[in-house]
Image (tube, rainbow, N blue to C red):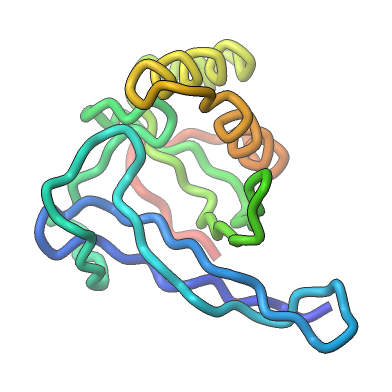
Length: 163
């Protein structure tokens, strides 16, 4: 198995939001095993409309404008930690790389620390569907399941250096 190096973390130069990377797999001829990534793109967080395209630059800690990764609240009360993981969303060949550090607002933090993962996911689905319409359920459930498979059972007050 080839170790695939995830894309670098980036923030938007204009609004300082943490950006989400996506990429496509590359494969060796005749193999189903990914050998690398290509077509890396960065996206603004889900849940808000931005009046500009993302302008990726390396993050500067005191300039980041973070949102809750669970519900997109503009309050961050901690960081739930998991081992870094990769996920392919349903109906896609695009690989999402995750550093395993999800910001959480006070409400989402309480649900995480109480082990109320189903309630947290239901809350996230309700909020995302209200903002975007349609069915966000499968996408949200897939992302949450991947996170909780790798969850370390820890929520910190400050971002952590993982690795």
